[in-house]
Image (cartoon, rainbow, N blue to C red; front, top):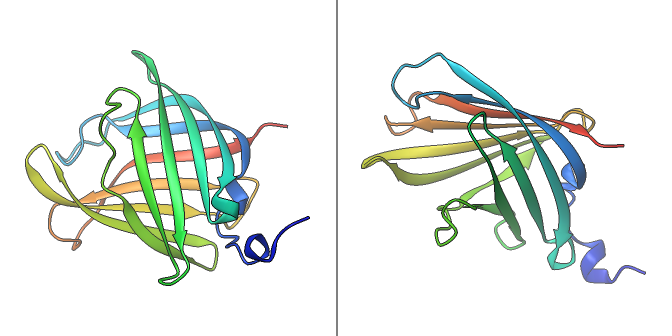
Length: 162
């Protein structure tokens, strides 16, 4: 039986709970006017944590040259109504990325952070599109002009394992 706390948990990320096969597309060279995409497969498994106020996504990414693991940790702040998302790459196990922070509106979640890439200050944007819960999509984009223009550099298309 669910507690009152769990009954009040946000439902924004419920669409991604479960086990998924992922089609990844990533730009070969980021923020350098590149239009060459690298495609690879992956697997993802997401479980609720914190009584539904968080979730943990375990990823296995199969790049053409190697495979590695990574984790997305998400937590909901009920006071601000926003989610924070951290990324931990298994190739750099001592470094947690700067969290992107944002919220959902009508099935689309948009999350932002300020970060640094190769010594250059950038803005990061994650976008979760869950309009069709059977085929959710994630996009990552960077901006080096304070959000005036964005370069989408990574997409993930999910199909649920049955």
